[in-house]
Length: 281
Image (cartoon, rainbow, N blue to C red; front, side):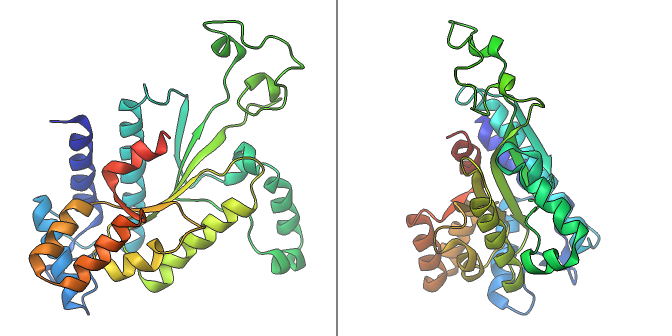
């Protein structure tokens, strides 16, 4: 079995067992129980996985936290097997402050100002966000850079790039990706991923990190509320897109099928297996 297939299955199994339970003993908790379509799609996707869900209720906060951890662990394991495509000293974290990374370190000063002055906080809001899962790379030593050839040895050459460790008084990681984890997508939850993405874009100094969303939401219309449109997030990744597409086909619901096809064809929705490959670009 392919390594990425094994990791995908392990990820799905972990999410099912640790973040999903049966509401009223029959409906997966990722479903909207007020929607028969949502319940049907969710139940059939979970059945397609073939993994058990939690036998007891899980609070929303706990389920969200477990989902974030599962995403982080999956991304780390997958990027490790793809290390030959993008070698680097990677860091994987949950809820780290973006001011800890080189593109956003200037926000630490602004954060202090906001904390000290309520009027400034009222006017500017919170600039320093803590995305769910972050992937960053550590700066590289000159010894590593010059491992195979004398590429750079002078202090005054390539002296501003954040990738070169010697350019930092304190080595500062470079933010590579921000991953927003949304177990489900209700109307009031999806938009903060956009806001977070816009903050990352507008407040950076340097290149923009990958900005993506991972979800287990079964309803295509709710996925579309976040996936459609461009500018604030790169793409939405579903924890079982292949299974959801097959379930949609089996349902005979043309609107559901067309919605998924539109998002996939428009490069707005991909499977969780695609995510690590996209991150090594």
